[in-house]
Length: 265
Image 1 (cartoon, rainbow, N blue to C red):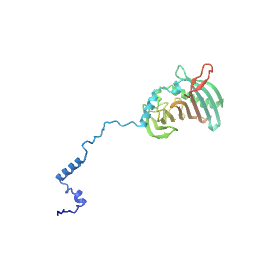
Image 2 (cartoon, rainbow, N blue to C red):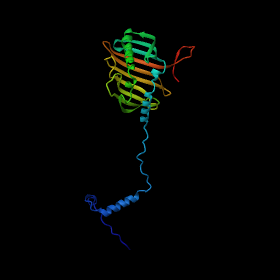
Image 3 (cartoon, rainbow, N blue to C red):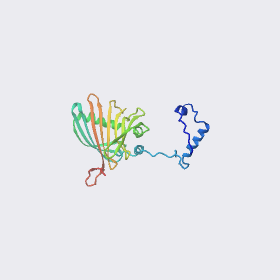
Image 4 (cartoon, rainbow, N blue to C red):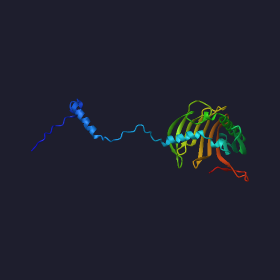
């Protein structure tokens, strides 16, 4: 009969503390054993393979591409415009209905169809807003577009917008320039369309008061068809003025009718 001698286990100090248990020959033997356990056919990691683009980055790329295209509410024919304005502190209000088109000068031209309500609101709120809007339109598009050239973008999260969702970015102007806003933009996850812009103008032409804006773009079949803009503007001596501007893209109706119909296709 053969007997095997069992030696007592050395304590952790003997093994790891002074390093006397693993001599050079033992260490080489251990390394050889570990190497034999690694399959020779194991594929090496391909560090050069590109990572798949995230849905967020794809949506942002689509957004940048859409900025280079024309603005459907300025360059796609007639737009029905309804402006509801008020001076809340004075309980005064008015309403304007018009058709806006881009003239030969590439500026917006309004054909006023109806004006109702208080004359002070028309002159001090609606007319003042349209004047500021006209001055901003006169600025180079490249200088006021919400792009990385003019703004710093910081992603803050995702929000559900019904059947789809949008990515929210905080935007900060790189320079204090007329026509730029400090606020946020929501980018539709599927199309890259800016479905909401909110903030305040940091500087406006010939106007010293504060102007806050929230612009909500409505999509139908993934295409913009309507836009609702809420504006708060400080009027000297009259206080806060509020506007809600609703815009609908229009198409020319048949020649016999001579009317305009909503672009809902």
